[in-house]
Structure formats: structure tokens, C-alpha cells
Length: 158
Image (tube, rainbow, N blue to C red; front, side, top):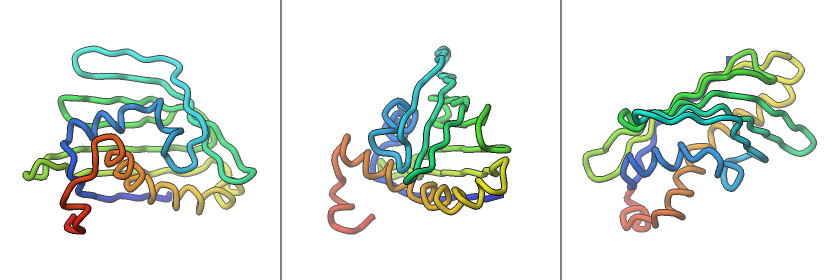
């Protein structure tokens, strides 16, 4: 039931932003509330990477781990996350990275989810909602750290 969708323009090329989001093993370093992430399996071929991963998220004393399938398609600059197991009834997450015509990227981020338990949903729902709203900016900040900040952002233009 909770759903969040946003578009953000960043000064880094789509291929770099795609690579940053596809590098799921690094999420615990910068993604809000991501405490651990382990990849169970990974298959690569024809520009497509399919990974099965366990992600542990937490806030204060609350911790939950869920399993998802991450499908990264380099040719499309798109990443789809399919929920497999854990505390959700469902979770649907999509990323798309489009050129902005100026060397940067328009990032499309979408997530829709519902907890299995109403109690867990009430306890963690607001926290998840806040975290998902911070995801886009967390990746943008990480891109600036790795690829360098753009001149336009440092001048307050973007």
C-alpha cells in the first residue's frame, strides 16, 4: 500500500548512476537503514545481471531481513527488484536512468510495498517511508563522493 515515486536530475552520466545502484554489495556503506547485504547468487550474461540478495534493514531495536531478486539490465539502464521472502506481502522496486541531454541523468525511482503484518507495518511503516524518500539523495551523494561533485551543483544550479 505505501508507494513512493520520484524523478531526480543528477549531473553524472546514466551508465555511472546505473553502475552505482547495481553495486548492491556497497549498500551498507551509504543506504539509509541498510545494515547488511549478502548476495546468495549472481548470474551474468548478455548485459543482464541477476542477483539473489538478503538485505537487513534496521532502526533502533527493530531489524528485518528480506530476500529479493535484483535484475540489472545495462543496455536499458534499468534495475528491477522483485521481492522473494521476508516481512512483506509484496515489494516492487524499479530504477530507470535516462540521459538528460546535458551529460547527466534523470533518475526514475519507484517503490511499492506492503508488510504482511499490520503490527509490523504500523511499527516500521513510517520509518520505511522516510528511508525510501531518502534513497534517491543517498545515491546522489554517493555519486558525488565517487565521481566528484559537479560544478553546477556546487554553484546551486542543479
